[in-house]
Image: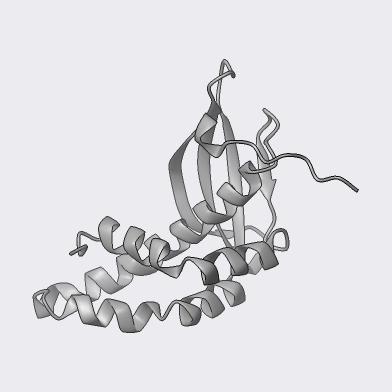
Length: 148
């Protein structure tokens, strides 16, 4: 079987819309929604990206998010640390969902609103984040205003 050539994901303009939110009917998953538009499309679509809570926990341990945040939060006022930690959880989920969406964009995306279930691309997502954990950490720190 010959695999299709990967698409250039830079042909897509992706905007975070909202999330993370619990997936209706599934206590074990969170979802983020993104607006996706390809240059050749007249209109964009919405893509709901789900990730299981167990996969998120495993990825958080893999990239040692807590330890890396603690290092950065030393410079933050003590009364602000709880806010940063709470926000970091949301930003982490958003970043993981975005990485999963990028993986879906590689083979191309049909111009229809769609959902990427938590069970899809699990292995690929784990591998992608294990291979480049610093990209995810940098994104999170930047979103929190804690980047060096």
